[in-house]
Length: 183
Image 1 (cartoon, rainbow, N blue to C red):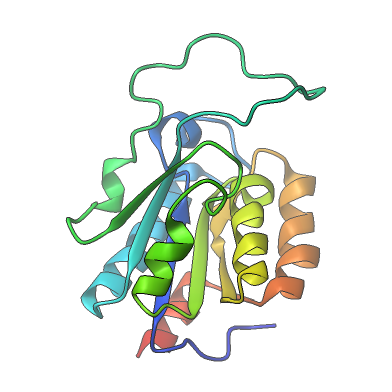
Image 2 (cartoon, rainbow, N blue to C red):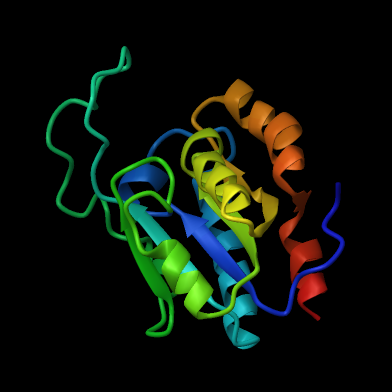
């Protein structure tokens, strides 16, 4: 369902738009996703609304069939891409799980600011973005996903999240439509 409204206290949460992730091969060009995320961030900042920049700095413990990525990542792997234009008022959240809520202060920081709705963007659609959107829904936030500001490493996984999961969690729309709702 297209986004119908944004609460007065809506926050933007951009997931894993960092050097190590944006350098991976994605379904939609990462540069376009970053540009849309930066456009959303600029629009939110100009209206005095919270912008949260999330990066992943490690992995959850435990064994999986996929295993852990081999080798030591480059030193700048977890650095946010400069195109986001990080500002002093932005919230920075470093996570070690797929989602941005578990093991972080994200929920407390948003509640402290009176946030009732979250707009999501970032990489990867089916991992960090979906996990964070699910947790936001479970925490009682209204969820909106900017579907042209997300991408994945896998086309089928991206499509599943956008077509099947996100509409069950909240509303979806384009970057421009969401900016239009900001007024």
